[in-house]
Length: 115
Picture 1 (tube, rainbow, N blue to C red):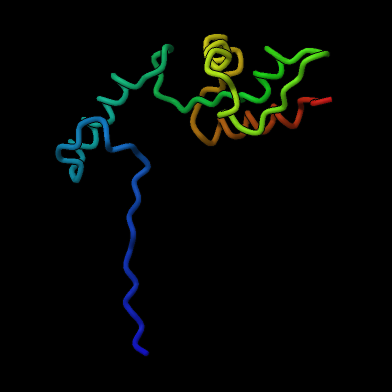
Picture 2: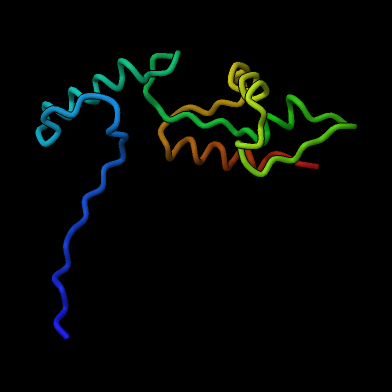
């Protein structure tokens, strides 16, 4: 049986349903897209970094009490009005590059007691 030739797959870590796409195959087009993303998608601190919210810890600290407790399995279980409070508190945000955010969140979780 003849083996098919291996083909390369190129992936792009971006959302192409928004933003400029003109000349993405050229450096000028890529730079224009990055500048557009910085202008439109930047956070309130002016940065264009990844942001992570540890919703499990945030929900626990903001809403769980000694008599009422809800253990979350995923963010989708949080009612929208409570998620809005978590988002507006900004206390549980972790900003930075993806690798740094992951490291900081993992460190935070290791040092946090859930008892």
